[in-house]
Amino acid sequence: GAVVSQHPSWVICKSGTSVKIECRSLDFQATTMFWYRQFPKQSLMLMATSNEGSKATYEQGVEKDKFLINHASLTLSTLTVTSAHPEDSSFYICSARDGGASYNEQFFGPGTRLTVL
Amino acid sequence: AQSVTQLGSHVSVSEGALVLLRCNYSSSVPPYLFWYVQYPNQGLQLLLKYTTGATLVKGINGFEAEFKKSETSFHLTKPSAHMSDAAEYFCAVRPSRSGNTPLVFGKGTRLSVIA
Image (cartoon, rainbow over all chains, first blue to last red; front, side, top):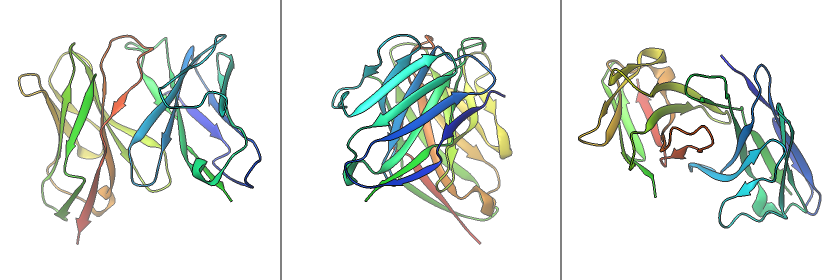
């Protein structure tokens, strides 16, 4: 099946720094990728929808200037957490839509654990 | 708005017993339905999905689920629980056939298996 990777798998940073998380579709082209955030023992909450070559669509309550999303190619989307603070610590998961699949199946990456000190 | 309700945030079963995890959804159109499993500090693994056709769907690791439109349910079952089934389970719905529609997740059910 289709594979989605995320890098890094975990990252620890100091408060005030920026962190970039990559989401790659390894064997298919993904015109659409989704970014989710998961707090401990909670469900996944959609942050934004990323379309290749255009601006991301953010969910209500998600700060677009804080969570910068770039989808510059059909296989790569990046999420940059700018000026990170401890409350940004979370598990970030991306998914990518395989437009060639029979029902546009979405595949999930393994997630990135962000800890902000 | 579309929503997914998972009844029971925590379910505990004995090893070898039946596993039943409940999921109800609201959707104004025929949905795509999914069950995912998540082990600690890992991403989501697709267990099974319903798109069209047969309403009883078989997935990996012996799990299956039945789409019941009249009950707007998609409950997950496994005849005999194994210790390795202990994990968090998420039911999700994609309320549109459009591939640009993100999944809506339930709050999850933590399954514990007692030896």
